[in-house]
Image 1 (cartoon, helix red, strand yellow):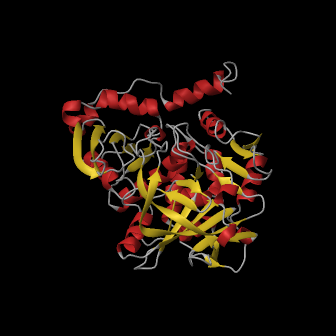
Image 2 (cartoon, one colour):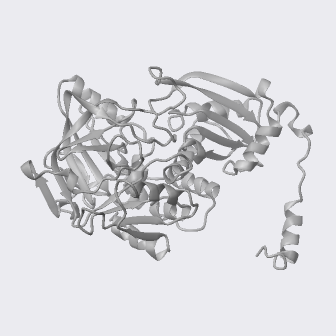
Image 3 (cartoon, helix red, strand yellow):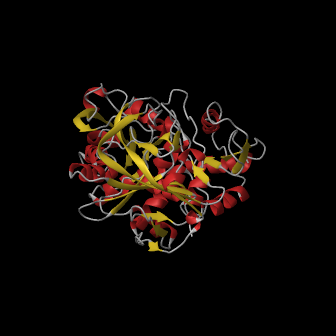
Length: 473
C-alpha cells in the first residue's frame, strides 16, 4: 500500500514535516514554497486552512527536498551522500523486476465522486505558484494517465495542469513525451483522447512520472517493483483508465479534436517563463473523485536549485549511468545531473580512463542516451578522483585539466523543447551540446603533475589525534 498519509506520518517521525496554517493561495503559498526550497535541508510543508476553503483541503510541498526523504520514498534505508545513493540506486534498479498493477473494486479515492452537474474542480485549492503565472495550477506534482490507442500500453507522466473553470483544465505536454504521442494519435484519428489525472499520492508516483522510462514500460509496473508489491488501481468509469486506488484526488476527462485554449505562461524548472503562453488542447472533465479532506501533492518548479531538480538529479543520474554501462562504457565511477541545471542541462561523468577516446565515448553516450538526450547542454567528463556531485572539485578539474581548443566538441541539432530559454521562438525543437573533456590527457596522463594534498592515511591519523580538540568531531 502506497499511501501519502502514511508517508507523511513517517516523515513527521523523522522530523521532516511541518504544518503551515492560513496561507493565502495567491500571495503566499508559492512564495513560502520557494523560500523554503532555498533553505537546504528544510522540511516538507503541509498547507491547510486556506482562506475561503474548509479546513482539511491541504497541499503538501517540498516532499522530496532532502536525500533522507528521497530515500524514504524509494524504500532505501541508510545514510547517504548524493553519489553513494546514486550508485546504490543504480545497482538496485539493475535487478528491479517490474510488478504490474492490481485492479481492485474500491479504494479511498472513491470516498467522494462527482459527475454531471456536480462537477466543480474549483472546490479544491489551486495556488498561483509564481507571480507571473497565467493562472492557478492544480497539477505540479501530479500523475497524468493515458493509454496508447494502437498498442494499449499505459503511460503515467507528470505535466502541468492549469485550472480554467469548474469543468475545464489545461494540460501542457512537451513535444516528444509519451502522453503527447498518445494524444496526437487520438486527435489525428479525429477521436477524443481520454485522460485521468491523480493530484495527490505517495511521492513515488511523482518521482516515477518524472523519469525517462522506455516506451511500453508502464510507470505503475516500475513503482510496483520499487515497492515490492503491485500498485492498487481502480478503473475509471468514464475513461477505463487505471487510477491509483489510494490517490487523494483524481479526475477523468477527455481532450477533444480541434479545440484549444490559451495555456500559460508558467514558471518552469529552467528558472524562466520560457514556454510563454500558447493555444493548447485542454481537458473537459467527466468525473472527479477524492478522499475526504484530500491532500494535493505540489511540486512547483522554481529557479534551480530546487526540490524538483534535486530529486530528479538523483534518479536521472542513475538512469544515465545504467544506460552507459549497458552500452559498453567501462569503469564509470559516477554520474551527476547537476540540480543547478534543472537536473537536465549539466551532466558530469567520472571515469577511470582505460583507452584513447574513452572520455569522448562516455561524453557522447551521456549526451545522447535515452535518459540524457532531452534538453541537455553541457556534458563534462572528469577523472575518477573527482566526485561528480562536488561542484568545486568539478570546476577545479574543468579549470586545470581541459584546454578549450582541443577539449570542447559541439554536437548540433540535438533534442530540445519549448522550455529551453536560450533557443529563439520558432526554433525550439533543436539545440546544441558542448562535450567537455576535463580528464588528464590520455597520451600523457601518467606524467601529469601530481595533485597537492595530504594522503588519506595521514589525514586519518591527524583526525584521530586532533579532531576532538579542534572541534571536528
